[in-house]
Amino acid sequence: MRYIWLDCDPGHDDATTIMLALNCSDVELIGVSTVHGNASAHHTLSNAARCLVAFGAPDTVKVYPGATQPLIRPARHDPEIHGVDGLGGVEHLPSATDPRVKSASTHPGGVIRAIEGIAQAIRQRWNGGSGTQITLIATGPLTNIALFTSVYPELLAGIDELIFMGGGVGLGNRSSSAEFNILCDPEAAQIALNAPIRKTMVPLNVTHTAIVTKALQARLLDPDTPPTHLDEPLPKATTTLRHMLSTLISFFADTYESTFGFDQGPPLHDALTIAYAAHPEIFSCRRFRVDVELSGSHTAGETVVDMWNYRQCDDSWGSNGKNCLVAESLKVDTFFEFFFECVARCDAISPLNKS
Image (cartoon, rainbow, N blue to C red; front, side, top):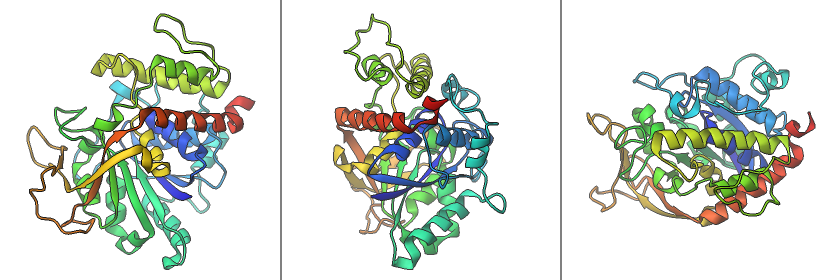
């Protein structure tokens, strides 16, 4: 069992990540923090709370608001891909005014910010070394992670690993060379990469292989449906939860086709972080020195992976070491089996199916 803290910016694929984290038998989600990114910090906070309710989170799992802007640069969002509120086109999610949603982001005594929430969780679980470490998972810009590692260096021993979706090896999606999460706050990404903790990067090169095809979407809607041909309509959803997840996929599929030309379906970028936490054996990874380009006029935000060991490094995970495992491939079929197992568990508990 791994105890997971999820830092995210929901976002369609972040929503599926929350679903997996809550319904995977191999991890326990202990907290969620939100950050600027796919939408404004106001929307990402609300969206995370809405997802917690929809996916059956226990009352003990709360959302903690984090950074509203990058460390230095202006905030940027991605309405072209995710809609203005970050979850465009998604049907049957609880509204932001639902009392259960309000409760999911309300803390006794007032607001608790992301880095304080993470610190509290580590103190409680790690207990100065006599307890259990937690795993940090980041699926948005790394601003909260950079702030936490800078403000609470004494608590880093309580983190077993930082797993983040971001970057690419010679590949970008929001510039010719930079991936969106890193491009939003390159300085924060460099600070996070320099932190002396084990890190794993799940880059675009791998996430672009986890495509939700029409046949997979049909199975999502109705797990007993036979394989769907491209010229056949999708089946009717067997539950409200499955309908909601399908509308999420459909909106994401449309924006990915119109923006990037993905005609087979959208990639589930962020969901791979939970799969890695639960089943690292379905990934192939290698350890490299990874840095972020901060000043290039054409390459700002690029993750520079030292494939040929040009930089002399020590064995640490910090600023002078080979600081990051980089995922290079995924057993795609195994991942989707894992995904559907979690959907089935969620289907049995989701409040959406009881309303």
